[in-house]
Image (cartoon, rainbow, N blue to C red; front, side, top):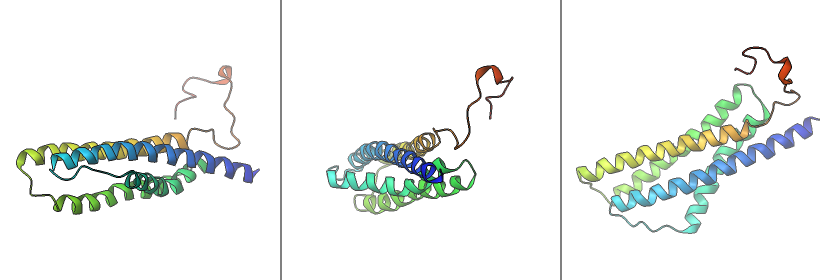
Length: 158
């Protein structure tokens, strides 16, 4: 039965990473385009680049998503957190390099850029939340949900 449980965790974790990765890639790519427009840079992007971003997100989120689907313990949160934090850290490095090539910026541009950067942070948080929710959407292995009459006051609270 552990083989069946592993397959379920891999399937659910992969679905979570792909869902979060694709949503995150679409939203961050749109924000990147707006950022480049505000920065007076070249807003053109390739489909290859967009696909690479989606693959990058999925690869970084996959181990943690599978771990979250496998176990309700706390250790999967650490593994998931490493992948989820690595994405914006890497993106910050790339953005710094790309924006240095088109700067300097006026105070008005900086004001808009800061808001867009906060939007990017929000997308990364949304992406992590989607992956977490999808990965943890199944019942823990071997646990059954009690029937309604057996639930006491507060039984469904965690």
